[in-house]
Image (cartoon, rainbow over all chains, first blue to last red):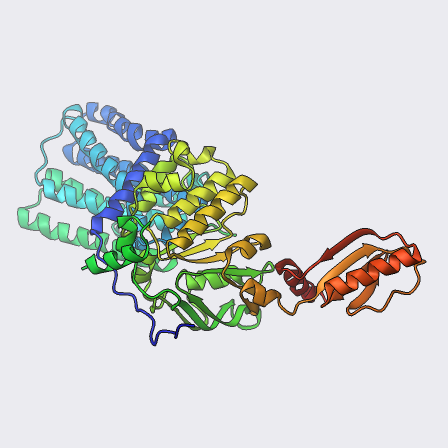
Length: 275
Length: 331
């Protein structure tokens, strides 16, 4: 009989893996699935394309540029809601139902990588769709060229990213893919009110308007409006310094939501279906 | 930095592929690779608390196949989850390759492969796509085609998961478990739902992995599976380990049994070494001396002209040990 070794071998630290490799591998599979799911694909691609045409009558009626840019912001918010929020909500719920999330969590990929990977295709599609929508809208609605593209990109980019943890948080109260049609409604409705174009804020009490400014979609619209036309909600033209100061506040609101939503997901996300 | 690791591992396991060897950690065969002391797993709080694993000690050695058996609800999966680093123990310490599998999971996981009870594959992906997705998360993944070949799924590579049979999904599960060329393989009921042929093939694959030096921890409901595969095993019952050792050690000292139908009017039985009792129409003898008592019984029946039907004599086996433990629960 051989003597037992004095101390067992202790595992060395793990080798580093290229950080993007896991994310890319998982995102690739997610994209394959998205392309195979007709319903999801239609929601993600055809729907946003149709939106600019809905604004055609308003433009024909001779709307002010500020109104149109506000409408443009709302148009982008609606596209983000469908392409990123609703689409990802369905995806996360489906992956959880199929126990895919549970499986991936037993592997080497970090929790955040697993969840982020599913969002990559949706975010890429959102970027493409919004670019296409903007390209269609300018000639169709007779809009001027954007004054500060970085502000628009910042607002839409942050907004799109924020919708990922919001979709994850909503997935907690969504048992099946079908019930996402219902559970997605509250946030969609609030976000649309937040754009300021759906409900006339001037007809509402002042406190309501102040509250609505903190809805995540309000800063997105403000950044698009400011970046495109350089005007505030009342149509007053802003100087460059004013524009960036106001943008800072809007970005702050978006970042605040982002931190809050990520914190909630890190603590409370349900990885497995309810028994 | 991994060069000396891969060369020594390759020397001890010539069949290993380069990718598999790159991930393995050298160490003498037979050293403890998984240890648990006072491992407890408790669910719920206060009055509703339920102790699923009641403080067990385990030592699993490098290169062995360890079987974890138990009645339903005995705590097998609860134990396995802790060893796999998927759950934190309520009390006790666990070391896998010298590290805490929960806290140091980032370092331990590249060296282990898991086969879960639930598939967890997206229905819309094809077999090869699903394995490629999983492999993308691994530190050292083996080629997808090679792994599919090994689990006999190469001809189903392009088939959607939704079109697979239950047994094929289990094989894909196994493919994921071995895709990283793991040092330690956890198999939670690996052959449940497989037809006899696939089961035999799964057994031979598990045997080949063991020959390569993989340490395997296996739970199963099939006692013949444990009997033919496991080097050592533990039987759990109500959160405790009630028997542990090789199959021979576990079976040793356990009585053999004789059963047969006995007419109610039959005269008194001959003297036997074992204990006889009547259960309605049936006689059951539990004995340490199977041959002597069976001979005595048959001679007696012949002399008394009593027809004994449905004779069933069996030496102590894992099954009889297991059943007596399970019966102990109802008693």
